[in-house]
Amino acid sequence: MSPDGNLEILMAAYQSGDFGAATVLIERLSPQLHRFFAGQFASRKDADDLLQETWLLIHKVRHTYRAGEPVMPWFYGIARHVRVNHYRKASRVALHEEQVETPSELPAPALETPGTTTEMAELLAPLPESQREVILLLKVAGMSLEEVARATSSTVGSVKQKAHRGYERLRERLAALGLSQGRRGGLS
Amino acid sequence: MKEREIDEVLARAAKGAPAVSPALLESIADSIKPSMRPVRPMPPAWLLTAGLILIAAAVALAGAARAGFYGIERLTALERILIFPALVLLLWASAAEFVASKGPGSRRRIHPGVLLAISCLALMGVFAGVFRDYHTTHFVSAGIACLVAGLVHAIPVALLSWLLLRRGFAVNPVAAGAVAGTLAGLAGVAMLELHCPNFQMLHVLVWHTAVVPVAGAAGALLAWALQLRARFSER
Image (cartoon, rainbow over all chains, first blue to last red; front, side):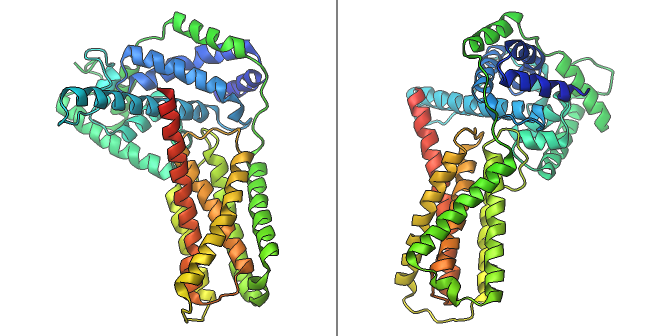
C-alpha cells in the first residue's frame, strides 16, 4: 500500500474519533510540516508555534477531508493558511511597533530571530515567497506537481513555472556561493 | 549546475533541519484529546456542486415566476439554446470552483479572477451575437432597474450557497467570496434573461452582464471585511 493510502486510512480513522490514529498522524506528519515552516524564515520557536496552531486547525476542520482525495495537499493547504495568517499578524505587529518608534519609516516584515534560521531557509532566502514555497513542497515534502497545485490553490502550469524560476535563482545563488555537487556538506 | 545537483543540495539542507521535540508532539496530542469525537465528512464535491446549481436555478425561476416570464417568451428557440446552456455551463463552473474553494487541498481549475472575467466575456459574446436591436431607450433608468433586480436575486443565492457550504473551510476566504459572488451574479443574470423583455443589445450587454462583476466584487469585499473583523476580534 502506498504511504498516501496509509494516510487515507489513518485520516478515516481520525475522522471516526480514533485518538490512536490522530497520534500516529501527528508523529508521522509533524517533522515535515515543521521543516516546511522552518524553511520559510520561521525561527525554531515560531516553527513550533506554527506546528501547534496547524494541528489545532487540522483538528477543527478534519471533517473537510474527503475520502479518496490526496491527503498531503489537504494538510499542506491548512499549514499554508496558518503560515500566511501568522506572517500577516507578525507584519502588523512589526509595523505597529516600528511606527511607535520611527513613524516615518515602513519596515520590512521581520519574522526571524537572528541566528536561528535553518540551512534550508538560508539557501532559499533569495527566492520570492511563492517560489520558495513551491520548491519546499516539491523537493522537501516530496509532493507531485498536481499535489503542490492543490496545496497552493493554483494550477499545475503555475506551479511548473514557479519551480522553474525558483531553480534558475537557486542555480545562480549556488554558483555565487561556489558550491559544487557533493564537495561540500553545507552552505557555510 | 544541473537540476539533480540542486536537488542533492536541497536534500542535504533538509536533513540538517532540527528535529521536532517529542514533548511538543505529546503536547499537540494532549491538546486535541479532550475534543476527540467522530465527525461526519463533507459530502462529495459533485453533490454540493449539484446543490448549488439547484439553488441558483430555483431562485432564478422563482424570481422570474413572480415577475413574469416575459423575456423567455419573446426569445426564439435558437436564442434560448444559445443563452441558457451558456448560463448553465458558467453556473456549473462557478459552483464547482466554489465547492473547491471551501475544501483545503482541492483541485483548482481556474483562478477566481479569471472565472469572473471569462463569465463576463462569455455572456457579452452570447448577448452580442443574439440581440440585434441597437436602440438605447431609457438606457440608464431601465438599466439600473435590471441591475438592482439581478442583484436582489443574487443575494438569496449567495446566502443559501454559503449555508450549504457552511461546514467547509476556505483557506482563502476572499477568493471564496469572489467565486460565491460570481455564482450568485450568474443566477441573477439567469433571472433577468427569463424575465426582462428589453432586448436592446446595449441594455443587455451592459446592465445584465454588470450583475456578475458587481456581485463578484461584493462577495470578495464582504469576505475581506469578515476576515478583518475576525482578526480584530482575535486581538
